[in-house]
Image (cartoon, rainbow, N blue to C red):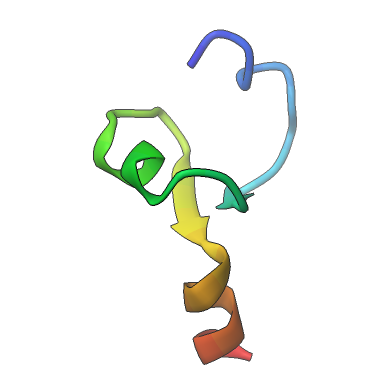
Length: 39
């Protein structure tokens, strides 16, 4: 989480392992499939 804190964004898009979304982060992390669904 500390590696991601320097970015001023509302959310991150996970293009790697889907398991990353199960971890606890201070910012929202969504899968690429979810972005495709939203758009």
